[in-house]
Length: 534
Image (cartoon, rainbow, N blue to C red; front, side, top):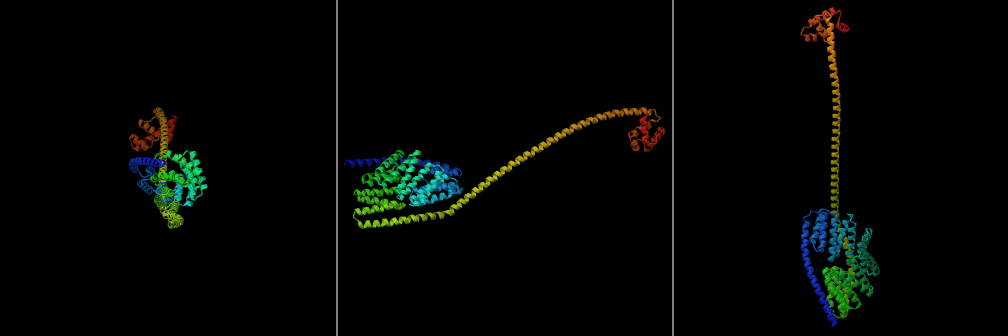
């Protein structure tokens, strides 16, 4: 009785803590929403660009992926400006959100579209993350083979980039593929490798996740002591990391452990702890599992009515999300329920349904593969068109850039040419000025020489005239005859002499004839010679 009261008290205390945690969370969410609205409006004022897309995606992550308007705006901008990397990031985030909402086929569609865009970029980090996300979505849609393929592709890229954190996440995903295929030794190998990396990175969250997975494998292997050690260690880490009580997965696995060990009260306690936390995070796969397993524990405690309700709750959720393992678990739980309540016909029907549904699950998996392929086919043309438009825009930008560079080149060349031409003509003008100055200097020298010569000539001429006058005085010539003789000696013609002396040409001839007679000469040359020699 005391033990029952203690359990009741613990349950009440836990629910009280959870209530106040929800109140505080609601208040925090209200404040955060107002802040996000303010930031969103500020981002919208910025011009459309790759940076604006990144800011919107970051804001959507801050809003815990609950703002579809933010994401759709980012998609609209990425499409308008044909930003390939932006489109890839948006679709990858849409895929993640679809997976969180348990729409696994839709999630695969978005991740594959993102991957298609990433083929046009050099962002290997984003491609690795996208491939890993594809692996997760395929695994949750029970497409294990496809999931494994994408995980391996992601693992190769992560190792090439030496991205240990992403490598650990991928190894964990591969481990979960082998859990789904019930190859537990292989699963354990990958979980332990992932845990080793997380310890080196000192990432407590990664360690918590891997330790929980190892504990789960030990449950399936029925190594319950080891499973309990690992799961309690994982729970301890989760309580340290998540102050809000985000330990739903650990409680779910502890519930499974105690159910399998036959400790049904403990099992129910942990499932009841797990379900509100899992609902808060909308992890329907684990919610379905918790309800079905809790129903089984209740059934073994004799609470058949509540067991039937909980098993059907879990089965309904499992069908909604297409969770193969939980649907199988649900129908097999109903077989156990009908067998214990001695409804053997219903048990047989449930068994037939379980088998039939198991076969249909395989068909669903095949159908999902077909749907996945069909999605790729239908979206490929649209995405290729966007890629082509983006390529054309990039080409246009590259052409514009080249034209701009060409214009700059032409401009620089023109400036250099103008500068060279200016310098050339400036130098030429300076040379011409120097040449002109030199010529002027030479001319000045010549003029100076000429002036000197003229002065000397005038002196010589004056002296000559004086000498001639002296010589002519000794001759019996008249004043007029002497003047005419001077002009003759200077080389003037009769006409010029007539003009200079203002006499007629005949008078000049008469004077010249008299001069010839008196000097006893026959012509001008003899006359000049005779005067010069006298």
